[in-house]
Length: 141
Image 1 (spheres, one colour):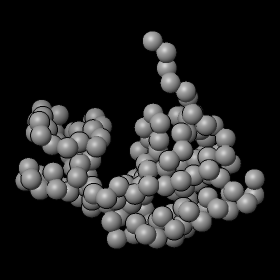
Image 2 (tube, rainbow, N blue to C red):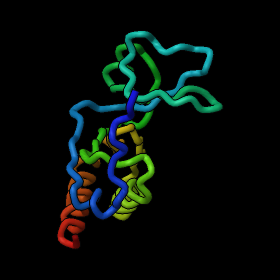
Image 3 (cartoon, one colour):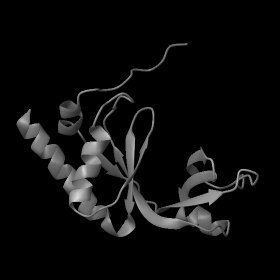
Image 4 (cartoon, rainbow, N blue to C red):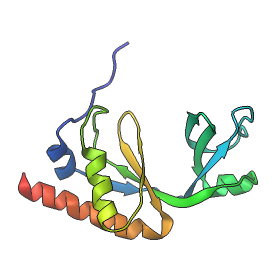
């Protein structure tokens, strides 16, 4: 079985070709103890095992439907560029740009794309900052 392409390593190429998509749903973060399985019908965007329990990212609607406690209502920005898991500095550059604007971000890397979960009320400002960054990088290359 062959593995798919590994993705782009060049930070300048990643930044200059960056396109963003914003998922329409509001997401939330929650945690469950290891011994408590998540409800089978819970829509899980991500599950990550930590020593203290399982961190789950789900939609706000799904968390409410299951009467689960949650924090951090946020929106998901997907970086529509196939970055390599070995790419150095890409997420740091995006996070830095958002930090300069006072926007917190929780990054998640998938095999094909990187994603940023940003506070719901800051989504437009976050997208604008990242689009400006991409335009600047394209002009420099």
